[in-house]
Amino acid sequence: MWVVVDDAYEVHRVATDFCLALDGANRAFNTVRAYAPKVAKFLTWCSANGLDWTAPSFADLTRYKRFIEREPTADDRSRSGRTTNLYLIALCEFLRFAAREGLVDRALVDRLSEPKFLRYLPRGFDPGEDGQRRLVQARTLKVSEYESPPESLEAEETAAVLRACRNPRDLFLVRVMLDMGLRIGEALGLRRSDIHFLPDSSMLGCSTPGSHVHVYRRLNVNGSTAKSRYPRSVPASTAVVDAYRAYWDARQDLIPDSECDFVFVNLYGAEPDTPMGYPNAKRCADRIAKTAGVTLRPHMLRHTAATTWLRNGERVDVVQELLGHTSPTSTQVYLHPSEAEKRAAVDRLALGKELSR
Image (cartoon, rainbow, N blue to C red; front, side, top):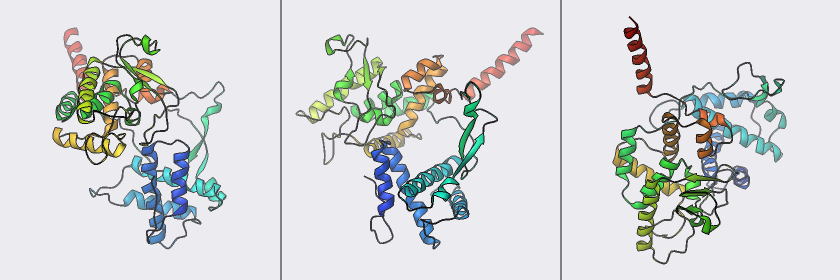
């Protein structure tokens, strides 16, 4: 569990209770992991500026926003608009929690959002029959950000990542996200009973044809969770099935009496045969990235799967089901052309003009 401590290393009770509330609301492990240091950043800033964090003015919050925008990061660059907004979202949620606990003035929290009429609609947004959904609550504490397509790997980078997997477990983990588009939390939450890698799984009481995995939302001891409340099945490629066989053989050799029901377990170190957690998965990704010479985060593998499917001509609704998106708008962010596709479009237009002369 994530906690926040003060200058004397005493637990900051309200901030820690906020993290517990996020966990109790079934927020993903990564969400709690991301919010805790951002809340700590705000509390540290208040302490450094002699402010009572329970009674800031809106002007104080605006000054904090400017501080987050201008504070140099580890690589001596300013934070992007998107990253700054993530800090502000965490702050707003924390203050709303504190207001519910009676610690922060409700009037201040009410100023954190205001009604806004959407003159221009986001892609895929349903305004309602009479446009009633155009009036939304918009955050007042925010900065401008520029949309960029989700980071994904190009073909040669993907090949380098697969070559860099130094053990069967890491290769299977990469394959599950790269070939099937699973989120890292969904992959780490898989149980052995979710794996149906038979041509016909009817003997298991499953009517889904072909090799596939089932994704369920559960409370897992390793903190992983599926984002969607709705279960789904995802077909598995031959490469995924082959990688699983190699991983299972290695797991049986290393832990012949394995009792852990999780698919992904720790094979090495002080705690073998325990569910693999996100920190270990992140270390695996960092190790693979270093060997492959690429930038890699676990979620980039899912982005790569979605981008590749759409570039290969798969329908958006099919990709939406594979990814487990509730709304097609979430899937449409992957409809971004590559540099090669844009170049090919220009070349085809020029060629057409030449032929028409």
